[in-house]
Length: 478
Image (tube, rainbow, N blue to C red):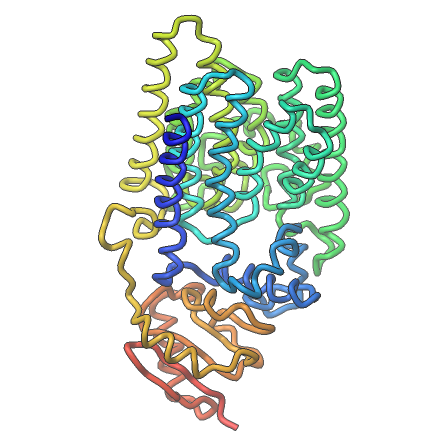
């Protein structure tokens, strides 16, 4: 019965997650940023080339200067078979495996089947997973899903495999190493075995060094202007090197900025407050009784709320995925510490119910902008596409695999596994332009996008080869 319950839960959520991520891609709701860019990077890495962000930038900038992501080269060989589905499938599989990893960890730690099942379900219900799946692929999602397996290896005192797994987390993205500094140091309070504690202390130090070297030296040298391109924290200063001083310069303003719109930006009032509410409802209230787990999330709080990029403030996209393993870990440890079984049952029901409520509520009525059709799997709109798939396939069959293309954002991921591709209206040396009358117009606004289409149709340099079901294929005249 135990194995059947585990299999049922894993299969159920695997289907739910596939119904979000894979269905979105099937229905043309993945985009040039970020799936198109990363799929193009897979092609380059699979062919032993560097990627220079030419998909969306006119200048030559190494992708590693934008995000120091070394998981992509490791995944790249699989793209020969899976093409544009590669990253989404990997992300999906790792997230599902993460839930089972928590079951294994807590069974080994506490030997309580019911509590371990709760941990798995609680993990699967977290809004951070649902919003991450709704928006393309990001390697920090895989890193977060590896955390339960790292915990399991530490519990088993298998330190050599743990080194490998920690390495995968660190190379997923430059900010994962900063997160690991706090996460691993927090684990020292949980693990009692001396050699595991030594391992955690050494890994914490290594993670700090890795972060400083990558973010402070390597990435700036790879960038075009010698600066860390991801440093968008004016509240801390003008550069990464000034950030440490900025932390102590005006502490009260920094504290307020965790909860308020410190930039005075328009259209984002209430976004931070909403995120904190859902964080508390999804298990954050429990973490208040176990401060060590709050400690593990400090860099996540700061990088979200102090950023100049307002899209990171809210519940949307992949910006809350690191919460998921920590909320699960802290909540289950709190429940285990409760003496009476009745109290455990009550807290499990409340915590699981609030996590489910938070996730569904975010799907329906978020303050922050969220692509609702991409996450509402219980509505017919999610399962429909605005594009004629047969017409798209026919048109794409007319484009050679080695052709240079400029493609509308929501169509680009399907054609990104090639040497050169650009997000329209970036054209450069493209031989083909593939656009549609409908769909996302980013980076142009709707009116500007329509003007660009009209200009193409009148152009003496481009010939409209196919116009079918609102999808247009233009070929450059010789």
